[in-house]
Length: 329
Image (cartoon, rainbow, N blue to C red; front, side):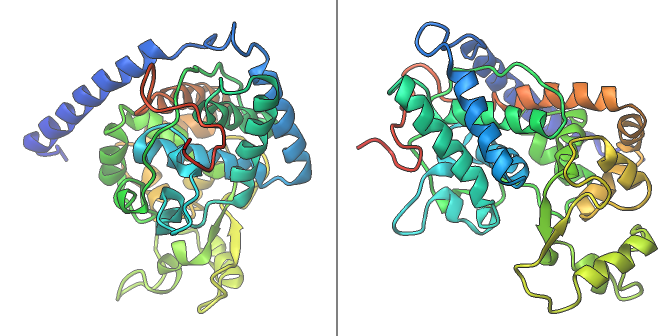
């Protein structure tokens, strides 16, 4: 069914303004930004990330999710890393409290290693961007060049987070609306959603699909019945809120296109995941990614580079933090 024209026009205007902002970001970022000032930055970060990965796989989804949350709130500026003694920094917001500590630890350790070689030169924002690429590669995903030159933000407030991140109950229109604000297309959004092939979720994020979906059907009818039974076993009602399960029930520790195969089979964990397949506007892209790992990998790499340009601070904006968890005094 055709969407209302006024709605299309509003979305188009959002995309136009976001595209203009993104072009500014792209013009000011470049792959060889530290070629003269810290030529080994990428290898230093890669070594730290690889060591951390060897200690725990959570390094992968933890770092990738950290990058996504950082970029969507105040832009890719490492504001997510700031710690506040008052518990009112960005990472303290309810939507960020489930971010894995191993993601933070990865970036903090990488920053320390970079500082030892190139003090005061490389931003925490750039280190997070490099680390996000590195964890994808370590889990078997595509490699891609990371544009650099971001500076670290000067604002980190929990009060600014609400409404900035996609929710697990979003439908396609809601997902497109929030991604388009950052010059990310529907295809970009579907590709980035593929990061759900890694990581885990707490039961309360999808319990409504198992126990209280609607008055006529407690279980979401789009949910594969076998998968629903498995989820009920892992997440019984009134389960410990700390319990978490894999988002990809088939290959949870491999970055692959299994997420899309799962969607085709009714095994998307969140409503927002499964809506990508049940909505006819996005279904062809899901089928393409499910049938072609190469298409998915290429789309994901492109989308990650575009994500990395969101709301960047460059030039004289922001600062180069000495410590990723604190603003320079």
